[in-house]
Every structure is written in structure tokens, then in C-alpha cells.
Image (tube, rainbow, N blue to C red; front, side, top):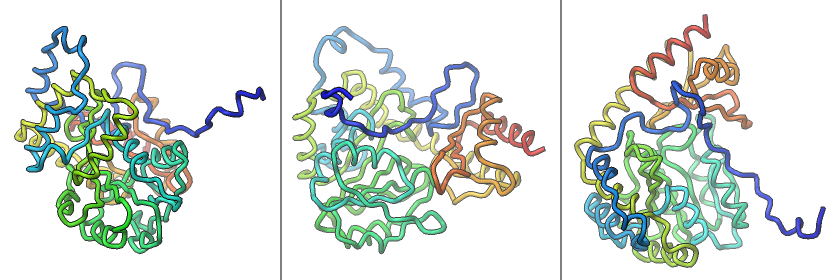
Length: 351
């Protein structure tokens, strides 16, 4: 090893879902929305001028935070926006998790949390989920340097009731508690309702799932103004211009169309509930999903074998080669037509 190699930071990186390079695939592996964004956003996407490319974007992202404020009935100072919720969470880790005490997140959860913790040299501990993949709230009563968890959880799709969230907040009022709500719109009650009671709460959401904007990379945090200012101070110390002009423009337009938003959510939820019936008939079991995906296992067939068979049919689902969940598949909810092709392939495999 050369001397300079000793100073290179070595991290086990996050592994994203596979992005197929072939055409005509059914892509059910990365929890994208199968429907297009709202019409207003598509129209705004066509309106380019030279200034969008030539000028720096607004570092305060005002056009977007104002629309978010209108949607939620809050002030724009209650919002922080970033390049996807991953960027927002990364900034939150750097801003709030600076204690010598370990932060806490579940042992089965979004695998980026441990990557950020390792990257920023943040100690952490991972309480185990119970036998039904649910949080054990009492495990979070221990002294810690902060708490973070998704709700619904990923990859299990399990929604914790708001009472559990509040219980964890009540027992952790001296640290920041982050609730990662990437999938909350598909059937959950948001912790935003608790912001008035708990000044140490930060809620993170995204445009990638319910709003069909994964490719645009827009995420946001909602919290008290002191928390948001602290995040902006860190952001301005790293990169003042995180959100490009195009994203700000299109993102601001998509918020306004509530009717289209609700229609799309209804379609996905209906398809999800039908998928639960179909998959049960095929012998799969799974935790009850309140997200836009289902976390399935089969008593007779190995998840990896099913994964490989579906891939041979150009149907991509997510397989995790991780202890404790290595016999599960995460299946994103697609259109009704896409799901029917999935059921047909699964029936062929089982036969």
C-alpha cells in the first residue's frame, strides 16, 4: 500500500436498485410511480429558455418552498429542499447527529442510514424489529444521539401508528427525531401533525414516489424554523445551489394539482390491494403494506430463484442478499397491466 492510500476514506457504499439497460422491461424494483407526473409539471418541463441554463438558481428555492407552504398550510421557513430526499437526509445527518452518543435506527430499514453514519463518523446502534417486522418502541427509550426511521418502513412496507411515533418522541425530547416519510402518501398518517407539539421533530418527504418525479430528484424536510435554518446553514457551507432551475420550476407546478395527485394515489392503492389478493392466492405471505410496494416471501420457493426467473422474463423486482430478509422480494406496484404480467410469470414459475 502506498502512503497516500492510507488517507483514502473507505466506505461500503449504498447499492441502489438495478437500472436495466435493455428495453421492454417491467420495472418493479425501485418503487417508482408507474404513472406520469401532473399535466402542469409536464407542460412546465417543455418551457426551457437560456436563462434556466445560464443563471444560477435561487439558493433559497423560494418558488418551491412557497408552493409547499401553501400545500401544507405552513410557512416557507418550515421547509428545506434538496436533490432528492437522500440529499436532504444527508444534510440532516451532518446537521443534527453530532453527539458522542450513538444514533438509533432499526436493524432492518433503509440501508443508506448506516452508509451516512459511517461516512460522517457517527456512532450508531440498530435495535431489532420484532417478529412481525415492527418497531419495538421501548428500545428507543435508551440514551442516544438521535433517532431516525422510515414510516412506512423500507423494505418491509409496514406503517407504524402515529401513537408509536409520538411515544418515541416523548422519550427522546433532548435529541432530534427524524421520520422518513417517502411512502406516507400511500396510506399513512403523517407525523407532520406532531410538529406543533415537538420542536425536535423533522419530517422528510420526497417527490420521487407519489408525485412521479424520481428522475427530477426533489426531496424536502418539514420542521420548526430553527431546525430548517440549521440545515440551510450547513447546506450553504457545502453547496448553495443544490436545486437547479429546472427542478425548482417543474417541482413548483406539480404541487398545485391536488386532484391529479389524489387520482394517481387511488389507482396505486387499488392495484396494491388487488396484488395482495393475487399474491396470497399464489402462496406468498407478506406484512400488510401501506406503501407502493409489497415485501413477499414464499414457503416453497426461494426468493433468489424467483428473482432470477422473473429477470429472465424481463420483469425486475428487488432482492436483498441480507441476513434476515434474504428470502424476501420487494415488489413495486406497477400498472394493472404490468402486475398481470407479473402474476402470469409467477404462475408459470410455480407450475
